[in-house]
Image 1 (cartoon, chains in turn blue, red):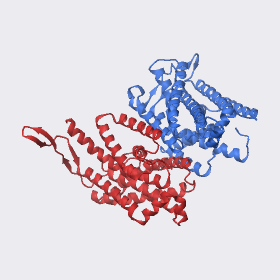
Image 2 (cartoon, rainbow over the protein chains, first blue to last red; image 1 turned 180 degrees about the vertical axis):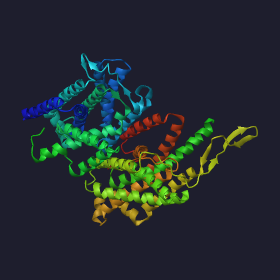
Image 3 (cartoon, helix red, strand yellow; image 1 turned 135 degrees about the vertical axis):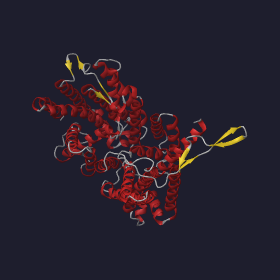
Image 4 (cartoon, rainbow over the protein chains, first blue to last red; image 1 turned 90 degrees about the vertical axis):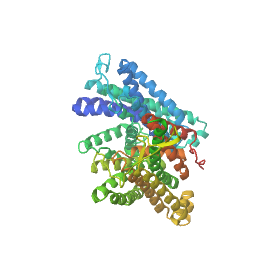
Length: 312
Length: 308
């Protein structure tokens, strides 16, 4: 069973590897962005899809990673690797603190508390405008965006760096959700009272899930800043908390590949519609409403229910 | 200006904010109280009220007062009808499942906001107030002849702003009479206390829900019609009222109507005062963090009763 999962994940990674050589430059550029967003959505999925924690504030963790890397590189002159490590620590700490407080609430309360924390984070980014340059954001020097000889601002460098991070995240999450830890998270999602009664420390497990989820989201934010050379407060806004929810719901909550599928679909849907109208978020709204009404399990979730029960 | 007159000016501006906020937040609170539903699209109903007010005033094109009165009737009706429709078409079909409702209303938020962007456009548009006299206000000073009144430069309010405060209070009073003195209000309160029991007594709960959802949106639209002669109509204007309404409803205690009004006055006044003396962004950061902390440590709100 587990071999089949690993095989599936490795073939997806292989297809993405081959895609760079097949696709025209425009689409491989888009795909690099999609993979980073998919990492973000995979992080989100661990909290929402597997543990049942519907957060509306993950942009806070994404932005913690983004500014953690962006500010240290731009203002502190750090190299890419230590800046990335610091970004991970920053999002881990933010997720840890938010988790301790927000997990005292549940359900709707949890949604609103995470939304409020993320809003406070967004406003903080606006408040320190002399460092963050607010909504306008700042560009990270192209020369600094390299690891050793690998230039991450080049097309190939960017694509394979995104793919590497995506592959690591996918394999780690694939292993995590099959491990007893992941199984327990699903048990908490399905019936928290029963999990408590069976003797699991539900509160601690939820906190760990949220911290891992927030750190992965932070890694995505840091990767976004590093690969695309830009950090701005708009990435800390409500919209960027909604996007991973949208990707995960569309692709299938609680499936390992759902976030990628959802990110690909939504990215191209928005990309195509923004060519026609500037009101492209309309599409996101319509998709959200239709999903909740007609396809609550998402694409892969429905597929798993109907045809492929083994799908990870 | 000296500190005293400055503070009074800040309090007057705060009172206007508080009046509008009380109306808007009351809409959110009524919906949550009766239906136990968190409506994230509430701010967009507010925005629609303002946009429709502009549309009505621009179409009629007569005296500003005629357009304003027409807007005050038409905008809440249209917005309320739209909200009821959304309730029947979307929320009833997903059975008001709390989490799915939030996701669906997020979708509704973007549909309304971006639909307005496509039709109304990205510009902010003004609506003329029906009347607008500048009223200079006096301030007391300890002068040579003891206490004396004088008129500090800049300490003034417009008659329209005073009207907003009075009108908001009147609408809230009418709502209170409606909830406590009419049969429809009784049915609403019965549904709020126990929807299953209400259904057993033959109350058409689905229809009550649709009407309550419409009423909540209409209250937001009324607030917006009142504010639009002071602020302009813009497709993104629903964001701040949504956040502030959330804050008010949570601080006041989810579903507690008197709590909502007290919290609206508290938040509106302090928002006005803090924004005058400190950075508005800092004021908002502190307010959002305060709300998060209230939810974490006192989830029933400051005045709410413990949830059953």
